[in-house]
Structure formats: structure tokens, C-alpha cells
Length: 323
Image (cartoon, rainbow, N blue to C red; front, side, top):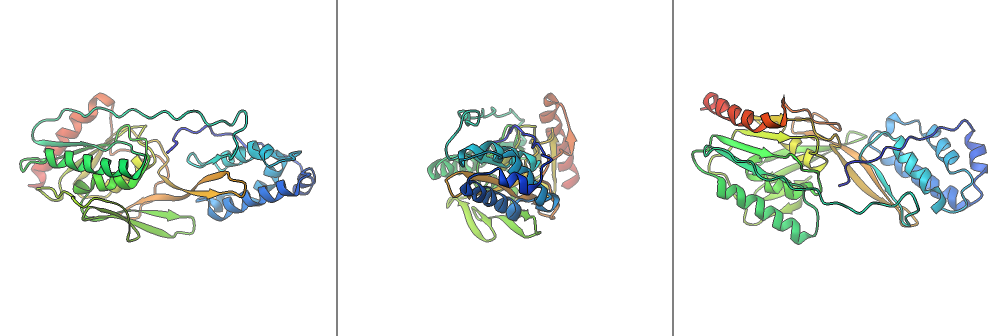
């Protein structure tokens, strides 16, 4: 998922909606702008916070003089920015000068951290790609957990630092043996409809429907382990979903820095001429229905050099309390 977006400020015009509309010479352009506004108004997660009459008026003013749909693309980009949401974006069907999408750069995968023999460690990195790649990701993460699992472990470090997102479902399956079989979180939409995510027997479920799975799932030698979750400012989107999945879990504590702040779910809407609106339609909530949607603050904010040593120390302290 795209994380760092340039928020374009929407210039509010003083003209009336009627006068702005009169300057749109093309009925096709007016119809297109109505289509965009209707989708945003019906589906945006914070729709109740937007004055849609004013929003439409200013969108029309931004598009004033446009004769083709392509000429209103900059106005649509500005309108998306005016929503005040870091996760939504407009993908035009035909890129125009100044709106080109830069070539995607794959984020780095951080190296694993060395830990003592009484501590388990797993990094849950970002993942995107084909079904084959997603399946391989699940297999790799669960295989690493299996390889590192020992009866004498006092707990696990789950490292989400640098996880900039992608597909959350393979991440949940990969980390499933440590998360445990349970409801892990929810999507909460603008009208308070909630949809549960769950991990169960190698499957990530959304409202009971399988989103990702592995037939050869692993079960820890010691159930319900102590877990230290590590986050940083690059933990984003689906990475934040995994962080939310560990929130409110027993014997779990987070360390590091606050996450990126896009703990929200996007939906894809195809416009009539082929452009796409990637629109934020829900916020993440944890298993206790605490809603996020912003940066997730760690339980213990720490400098980078302090994170792993403190996480290990806490696991050992918690182990003594728990046993």
C-alpha cells in the first residue's frame, strides 16, 4: 500500500455552486464530478465530518472551465486531499503531466535481530504480489516460527518495524501461531457496521470468509505466550493491522515508536472512464472494539537502540510474574 502521500490542500472558492456549474461546458464533466462526489459521500469513513454541499461547490469551482474529463483530474486529486485522510488516493485512467505516479520502490526488509536463547523472535515484514508469493510468505513466516520454537522460551518478540503494509491477511496467518486462535480485530465503517477478523487453524477469516490460509499450519509448543511487539514510524497500513491484532491480547506489550498513522482500510471504486478511487472506508479496531484510524502509540516509547534490550527484559520480567 502507498503510505507517504502528498496532501494537497483544497482551495475553497467563493463562487456559488450554480455559477461554478455554469462554467462547466461539458455535461459529461458534470456527470463525472457528480459520480465522484456520490462515491465519496456514500462511502468515506469520516463522511459525517464533511459538508458535502460545500465540498461539491468547491470541486466544481476547481474544475471550472474543464472541457474534458481528463482536465478535471487535478480537481479530483485536490478534493481527495481535502478529505484530510492520508490513505485515500485517486489513480487516473490516463496519467497527465504533473499527476504521474512515480515508479514504485520496494521498501527494504530489515534484518532479523539477534536474541538470547530463551527468547523467540519473528519479523513480520511487508508483502504484496501474486497468490504464489503470498502463499510462500505464509509458509516462510510459519516455518521460521516452527524452527525457533522451543519449550524453554520465555516469550516472543514480534518485530513489525519497517512493515509498510501490503496484504494484511498473509501477515495474520504468518503470525497466527503466536497471535493464537481468536478474534483479532475489526473493520468499523462510518455507520458503525463492524466486520471481524479472526485467526483459526491456519486461516485468516473476515466475517467468517477465508482471506488467506495454509494447510500445514503450526501450533506453538506453549500456547498463549508472552509477546513483545516492536513498531516504528514505518509500520503502516497492513503492518498497523497486525499491531492492532496484538492490542488487548493478554501478556502483550508494545515497544518502539508510534506507527505511521494509516490504521484504516481502503476500498477500490472504479469510475466510469476507468480511473480508480482508493478510498478509506473503515478504521481498524482491536478485539475490544477500541477504534484507531491514527498512529498507534507503543506502550513504551523508546529510542531505536533501546527497543530490543527493553523488550527482552520485559519478557523475562513478565515470565517471572506469570509462572
